[in-house]
Amino acid sequence: MYAPFLFSTSEKELHYVLLHRKNAEAYPVHWHDEIEIVYVCDGILKTFINGESLSIGTGDAAIICPGDRHYCLPSDADAIAVIFSPDIMKGVDGSTSVEEAARRMLSRGSRTTESWSEEDKEKLGAILSELESLPEGSLTSSLLIRSKLFGLLALAAADRPGEPYMETLSAPSRVDDRIGRAFRFIDEHYMEGISMPDAAAAAGYVPTYFSRVFKSSTGMTFYDYLTMYRIRRAELLLANTSDSVSSIAAASGFSSVKTFDRVFKEHEGISPLKFRKLHLSQI
Image (tube, rainbow, N blue to C red; front, side):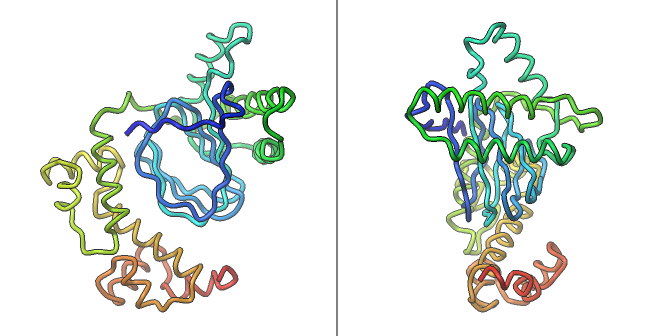
């Protein structure tokens, strides 16, 4: 599905929005024409860009280019997201060629900052902190915001030798909109005993075709995604509530505590109880 953003009215001419998120819900697969940079202040954000699974840790960021299909699982990460249009360069000498060059440089690079130097990561975090502290509504703040966005763009589009290549996909189609229905179905019914045919029906596909389209759009099978989604929900409950493991297993959609314990260990390498002990300070 296409997801246009509602930009802040005070900075509408910049096509810019800044969001600070914590304990975020899942975001279904979507794309947009804006650049999005999501910086993790604390925790781990599990996101997927063009079918690739990425875990973004503290001090790192995800770089989402125009047209990238992306989504994320429920998260308790503390993250700052800035979303802005490449047309902020309009009015700059040679803006058309600069914008095209920036798009090319962004699209060819990695979608995370893992290969960045610590100095560049610190610069990124500092710019986002400065953006958060700027007042809105004045000419001065508009000029400062524009300068900070140019700084972000320069960092994100910098040429870094050895950086892995990741291509922006072609323009999304109605397929993505229908897969979005499946994401919403999972979000609303993950605690129930749902199946792939159930999600296929919600998306308007026959099961066999839905299975292929879902994996092509997300990089995962339906059941792998559903399992990961349920585990992430369980992690949030384990880390942030005192609910029993059995009640968390049921609330996360697992048929039994035994199944929950086995699947959780397979994916996380530790039992649910050990995971909770590691996060006791967050309760």
